[in-house]
Length: 220
Image 1 (cartoon, one colour):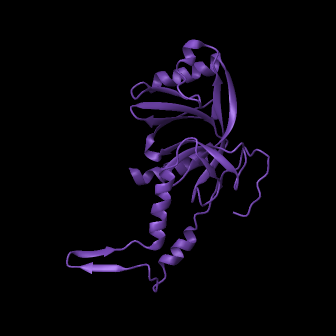
Image 2 (cartoon, one colour):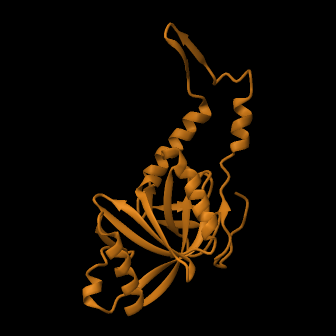
Image 3 (cartoon, rainbow, N blue to C red):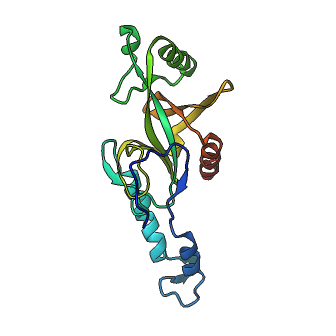
């Protein structure tokens, strides 16, 4: 990626990290491509994976192996085909000890049982009402199979970032919104037998929802 990144925090622009789809389609159309080997047998026809397909499989495997706390660079090598949405994560500064006990990790997310998401939504609202909320910049990253949250201090393509979370798309089980605050999104992610809730203010909320729904279709 040839873009120079600046120190200015971007709060509006969603961008795609090119995964060379056009080049891949061109490769598959070549009749003399030696990487396409069709193997026939008495039971039918099987198609050997092309070099491109093998590379894509390796990329998906590597993305799945990224863990919270890992350092990555915002490039197509690390995040091929990803769409990044700038947002602000709402981190409560907890004053109440009872409510503080509900904050389970360093990124200030709340956890509840799989059958108690309504109570969890009320807890999040109570946290916001009774305690100060600090917005911190994040990127929501949507790939073909994964949903990630990264922290690059607001910098874009070419910048270093810390991975805050990395989930398969199927672990995103619920989203809620507020009519009076349309940019506010609450995401509920499966974590074992628990759901963890996260609140983000997403300026490009509709675009974010559209790409999520599109990529989730393959898992239905």
